[in-house]
Amino acid sequence: MTVYSGPVFDMAVKQFEVIANYLSIPEDARTRLLMPKRAVTVSCPIHRDDGTTAVFEGYRVQHHLTLGPTKGGTRFATSVDLGEVAALAIWMSWKCALVGLPYGGAKGGVCVDPASLSKRELEALSRRYMQEMIPFVGPHTDVMAPDMGTNEQVMAWFMDTYSMYQGKTVTEIVTGKPVSAGGTLGRREATGRGVAHMTRRVMNDRGINVNHATAVVQGFGNVGSIAALELHNMGVKVIAVSDHTGALYRAAGLDIPELALHAATHGSIAGYSNELALDPKEIFTLPCDVIVPAAMERVIDATVAANLRCRIIAEGANGPTTPEADLVLTQRQDEIFLIPDILCNSGGVIVSYFEWVQDLQQLFWEEEEVVQREYRILDRAFDRMVARARQDKVFNRTAAMAIGVKRVQGAKNTRGLFP
Ligand code: NAD
Image (cartoon, rainbow, N blue to C red):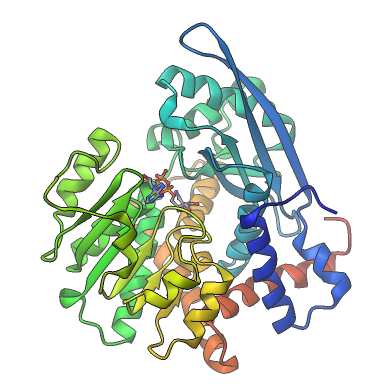
């Protein structure tokens, strides 16, 4: 019996079983590796603008503290529940271990539609959530970051709330803050930039000419819009994008800088153009070189996987591809190259790590240094994954997860049962 449930948690368990079997991890070590160290559920009451009181449920799951503090984003979305948060915390652990960061995984969230809140209500909820978490987080215990539905401003409120309780400024309690509040240059762009960088590597390796390549991006928030912009700046034609309001398509390539400006001003791609509107269901069936899912989990299931007409999947989102879809992808003759989420979107946590290090030392780097170091870590992890996949003739996700799981297992074996 476990308190964790739901389709996203089941997916994290299934993925782990594949890796545990591949690594021949003994049965009695599996539960210890997989199950989170702790989970916190809190109620966050706020005053609404109309004078009523509303209560929102919030969660934080810390997967393991074996390699250092836990690290992970905070999601504000109506999908958030304990199972989803636990799955995302587990994935963060494999991700941090794969790229060699001194962290375990964590994740948190509040079940709320942030678009339904005024700015004042969002601030009240953000501050209340952090206040409830104060006993459980800390710069050397658990460090939060942004995720779906949260942004730099929310991180600034988190940091300020924590700091007020400590009686001093503690910038290192969260990452993804605005540069004006102790954030690092290059963090806001880090995840999308990493997605585009990994995509370019695969295109180069596979002999795909960047200037003739086409891409489709699902999700046009922090990750999707930056990935699209970076790909566009490289010379790739981004022919379609979608968000929760709809989709847009232009065979000759969309004007991504203009669209990004529109989305930043209006909060979505809605209202940009009626002529370019596309049924969002068609987004994954368009012929293209690269598909970037950058919105949410489980959008590529077995049926979608069977109908993809791309050469590369660059997973910007966490968990966009189901284990059933993975199976279809491994059986397809055309060998679509998968850049798995724990590698592809790890630029975000890599630069979050840089932000934490800079805050601890109060010594700040130039953006160029941030970006170069990010790419170096990504390239190293990419090389390790590809070598492992080739050597053992396994799927890229299996290779990447195995490297991460093995590192956590090694640390647990040498440290003992306590952390
Ligand atoms: P965000 O809130 O900035 O953007 C999410 C985007 O997804 C929005 O454009 C939204 O409209 C769109 N979306 C929501 N539902 C959709 C649907 N049904 N169809 C199409 N689009 C839809 O969030 P984000 O920070 O960009 O995160 C996106 C994904 O990337 C999440 O899976 C998140 O966990 C993952 N991720 C984010 C970071 C980060 O640094 N922000 C790092 C690693 C992974």
